[in-house]
Structure formats: structure tokens, C-alpha cells
Amino acid sequence: MNDEKRIRRVIVAGGGTAGWMAAAALAKLLGKNLDIKLVESEAIGTVGVGEATIPTLHLFHQLLGIDEREMMAYTNATFKLGIAFENWKDVGEQYIHSFGAAGKDCWACNFSHFWVKGRQLGIHHDIGDYTKEHLGAREGRFAVSPRAERTHAYHFDASLYAKYLRSLAEKHGAQRIEGKIEQVQLDHHNGHIKALKLDSGELLEGDLFIDCTGFRGLLIDQALHTGYDDWGHWLPCDRAVAVQTGKGENPVAYTRSIARESGWQWRIPLQFRTGNGLVFCSHYMNEQRAIDQLLENVEGEPLMQPRVIPFRTGTRRKHWNKNCVAIGLSSGFIEPLESTSIHLIQRSIVRLLTFFPSNGFVQADINEFNNLIREETENVRDFVVLHYKLTNREDSEFWRHCRSMDIPDSLAHRMEMFEQGGRVYQNGTELFGESSWLQVLLGQGLMPRSYHPIVDVMSDEELARFLSGIRSDVRATVDSWPNHLEFIHHYCRAK
Ligand code: FAD
Image 1 (spheres, helix red, strand yellow):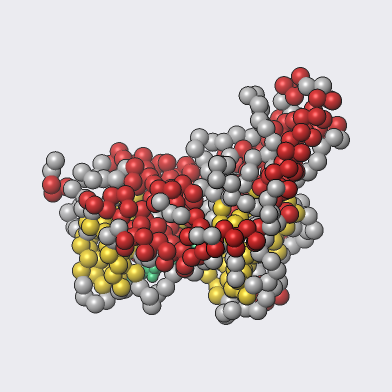
Image 2 (image 1 turned 90 degrees about the vertical axis):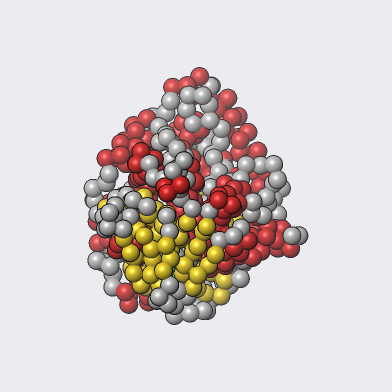
């Protein structure tokens, strides 16, 4: 092996959620053969939001050997079983996108086809009644069952989560450096990054650089000019205003997403406080109005001044360019509606581990990494665009724009398939499975015109028994769960 090409020195630039997730994973899994340094600036700080997660985080935690109870106690976490979308289809209506799968699928089609026929016959209940996570979220009940599949996620304090990961990363040998990166130095032969110069004058030389500097994209953009595909024409919101409040209502086991006049509001309940924010489109609403609207609609006392966070939805043209891999907000941002950013961070980390360039950079590997990430990001984008497009709302300019805007062809195709024949599918290894697409398509008001012919093999009586059998099973499971908050206190204290 050519020693000159060997990648040993890894520099992680930035210590937000992305930086510490990357450092912790690399240190735990490859740390013995690497020298990992993370530089961050307390003066600059982190974006300070990003508190709702999705169940795929379990895979990351398993990889790192993270104990759920310890992590939850440390980060003030609650369980999250889904997201309630209020006012999205019509003002006054709501539905839940829960993390569980509805009913039972058969070889030819998924459960929704049986449900659609049941609906036509008038022998159905709400689709959520066939999903235990949905019913549990609605009724405030949950318990972790050791052998069951992990279909829950968390709401947690993002800064405490980064701190928790920092302790793991440092335990496995990563070294933290406090300082402000003032200059990114390039190697003029090949355009690779050679070193980061800090405000102290210190020079951090590396072989591989991971850009976790947030929206700034200090390395991937400001130094390497990688380019950005802007998705603002499909995802029009471009600002958020965020504020934390004290504990209001009892924490529910789901995130609330409440559509407002020119965007939507989140409510993320932690054990001892609530995260709130309004995501909005500055073309239709100014910042002061957004701040006022948010403050009018929070429960509990604000614990800080509201903070406006501008963003630009889209993705970096390449997430890995030369010897720099962008992870987190530096790599792009699909707005937070479905809490997908931390998931995308984790996917980039796992893919970087898969394609880790120990023996030097291989362009084919870099291309594959970029293609996989691009595909996954576009699938997530389509899923989020769906919520805006498929609305009946006409009560503001913003919603009229969303209703009439163009959408990606890939999304139009999926909507057409669902409307015509009730078909939903998972695109390769995409994050959101059939059950997620189904809940949002139905929740936003698109009802299939027909169902798969295999459903007609059942008589109407058999179908009625089939549906009510599933509903009773779901009911029995949820009835066996304790109150969500009582369970958290017991679970975290038992650690
Ligand atoms: P940041 O947190 O911004 O960290 C950047 C780091 O780089 C900091 O440590 C900073 O000090 C450092 N840095 C920058 N410049 C320099 C410099 N010159 N020198 C040294 N250090 C520097 N994700 C979810 O999964 N769920 C959610 O519910 C969710 N909600 C969100 C809501 C909003 C409004 C926004 C904007 C994002 C949300 N996200 C959410 C995304 C989530 O916040 C981020 O993906 C996550 O926090 C990771 O951020 P980051 O580490 O990439 O960037």
C-alpha cells in the first residue's frame, strides 16, 4: 500500500449535532487507525434547533452502543411516535403520520387496499385505528417493549445530545480544539484542502476534512465552491423563528405541526420544556409578523428571545468533493417538516464509513457516495413537498401558491399511481416506506379511486372480520401501555 495516500488525519470542522455525530462514529468504529480532531467555536455556537428525530436513529445508536435510557435521561428526552399535522389539508382538520405500519399487508398489495374497500362499504374506522403507534400517540400511552421492533423516536435537547456524543467521541480518542477557522488552505496541485488555519494561528493539517460548519459551508462551499441546487420553487419556506418555553401541557408523544397563514408551527415537547418554532416564507410574511404569530401561539413562558434562522432549501451538488465530505446543514437542507435532517446526517456518516478512503481517494467510490445521497435526498424532498401541494387551503396567498405550484415529476407520478389504483411503493432504500406515504396521502385528502382485485377474493363479511380483528389487536396492545410520561420517568430513573 502506498503510505503517502493513506488517510490517517481526519479533521471535523464544526461541533454541532453533525460534527459530534460524525466524530463519535468515526472514533468508535475506526478510531484506532485514525487521528481525529474536531474544531468548533463557542463564540459562533450551533444552530440550536433540531430536536425531533425519527426511528432510524436507533440504528445509529446501536452502531455506537448507546444505551437508550441513559441517552434519554441525559438529553431530557420524550418519546415520539409520529407527527400530528393540524390545518394542513383544511383548517380545523388534523391527521397523524405515525411511525408504525397500518394493518397487515398481503403478498400482492398493502393494507390500504383492504381499508379502501372497507371504506366503500362503510365498515371501516379511521386508518390510524389500525396502527398501534398512531393510537398510542393519540391517547398518550407508550412503553418500550424489549423484543418489539423499534418504531419510536425521540424529542431531545439538541445541545445536550451534542454534548452526550462529545463525551463518547472523546472517550474513543477524538480530540476537541476550541477555535475559529479563519482560513481554508488548498493544495494548488490537486485543489484538495490542505489545512485549516485558526484564529490562534494554529494550523490543522489533514488528509480528510468533514465539513460540519452548518449553513456557512465553510469548506465545501466557501473554499471548494461546490455549487448548490436550490429547491425553493418546491419548498417555499425560507425562514424559521424559534423560541423555547417552559413546560406547558403534559408532553405528548408526538410532534405537533400546525399549519399557519404562511407556513407552519412546530411544538416539540421535552420532559421539562417545549421547543417551538414557526417556519415561514418571507415572500408572504415579514419577520416581525412571524415572531408575533409564534408568541401568540405558544404555551408557557418564553425562556429566551425569539431567534430568526434564515435558510435556503436545497442540496449541495456534491456532498463529497475532493477530500471534503459535507455532513449536516453544510450539505443542504430540506426544511424540518418531517424531522429528516438528523437522519440524513446519520446516513452520510454510515455511507462515509462504507466508502472510507483508507488507502486513498477512489473517484468511483466518491461518485457512488454522491449518487446514493442524491437519490435519498430527492426522495425525502418529494415526501415533504407532498404536504404543501396536496392541500385544499385557499385562505392565504401562501397556500394558494402551494396548491398551484409545479412539483417534481417523480412526485406527480406517485400521486397519480395512488389516485388511480391506490398503489404506494418504497423507492429502493428510501427513508419513507409505504405506510408513511399512505398516511400522508390520505391525511392530505387524496382518496384512491380503486383498490387491488385481490381484496375482492374476501367476502364482505370476511373483510369486516379482518378489519375488526386488526383493530382489536391494536386496541389491546395500546391498552396494555402505561401513560407516556409516567413510563418515561420510570424508564429513565430505572437506569
Ligand atoms: P450547526 O449546529 O450550525 O453547527 C455548526 C458548527 O460549526 C458549530 O459548532 C459552529 O461553532 C461551527 N463553526 C461554524 N463556523 C466556524 C468557524 N469559522 N470556525 C469554527 N467553527 C465554526 N433536524 C432534525 O432532524 N429534526 C428537527 O426537528 C429539526 N428542526 C430544525 C429546525 C430548523 C428551523 C432548522 C434550521 C433545522 C432543523 N433541523 C432539524 C436540522 C438540524 O438542526 C441540523 O441538521 C443539526 O442541528 C445539525 O446542524 P449542524 O451540526 O450541521 O450545524
